[in-house]
Image: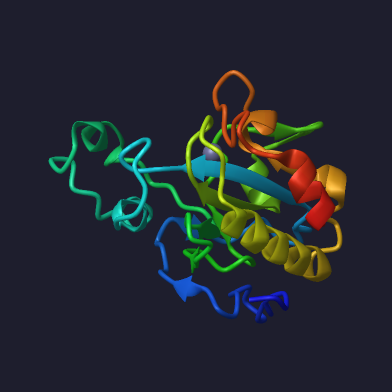
Length: 184
Ligand SMILES: [Zn+2]
């Protein structure tokens, strides 16, 4: 896992477990992909492992399996990539398509960041440290994405909270931005 992954023509990562999500569509015509958005997610909140994130992103979350799930089971959301606590990489949407990860959002003067961004979810919470394996995998993925999409400059690698302030807090204060910047 020391060389950076290859990304195929459609934007699938070599070495990722492919779990295609229906929650995606075409990007607007002639879109340049030039933003990388870092998120965190855990289901149920604060619990790791299990197949609940896959289920959410594939519209198969059982609303009766946990009280929290009833509140989110109707969402139609996804991300391009998920990095599990052990560093395992899961891909739901090929990079060339628009994943539904950012929601109402703004970067500079541009709204609707899903149009022009890649979304990476880290399995975690705002307050618990992410794992070394996750930073390693995130670094590999971010470098590969920057080669493929050179518009993703270091200052265009942001958190969900940066593009949806007041509405979102992830990846949260536990995320080590300096560590990611060094890996870029
Ligand atoms: Zn998020």
